[in-house]
Image (cartoon, rainbow, N blue to C red; front, side, top):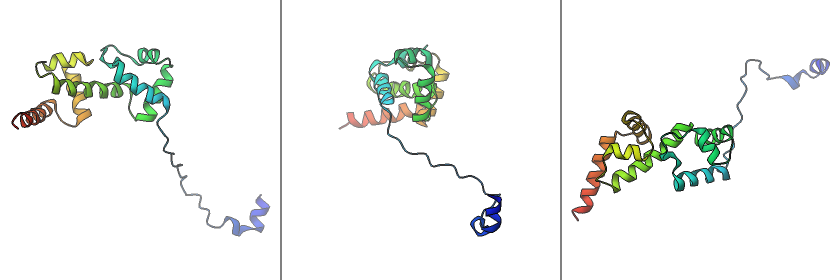
Amino acid sequence: MVLNALYHYSLFAGIDKNLTPVKPVKEIKEEPEQLKILISFMKTEKPYRDDRLTLQKLAEQMNMSEKQLSQLINQHTGKHFFDFTNEFRINDAKVLLKENLQLTVLEILYEVGFNSKSSFYTAFKKETNQTLTDYIKSVSLLMSGFKSD
């Protein structure tokens, strides 16, 4: 190879040892079937309502190893387990806030699987980009708008 380089030096023209390697472009893949099953399970069975839900418990319910479940969630949603479950909890809480006006925030947060106000408020803000108070105000305005027709 060295002799070839000496005789055919033009083949190696333009090679720069200072070039940085290019990262391969990731292929956009379809949601795997397992993820569809997981999301369907989360929506229908609502395991996230268990405030003691762990990766291990959910993996057992899904008949998967913890590692498989963690990789499935991380790679295909870009979220960690707790952010993934909190997304379902917050979406559930939003429905309850709209439909059950007689429930208190405390009752709702316990109902959807949170065990403290602070973790609920933090997750709500992270998931919706608005405070719970602002969300409730916007829902109240929408609801009063429908009633005044």
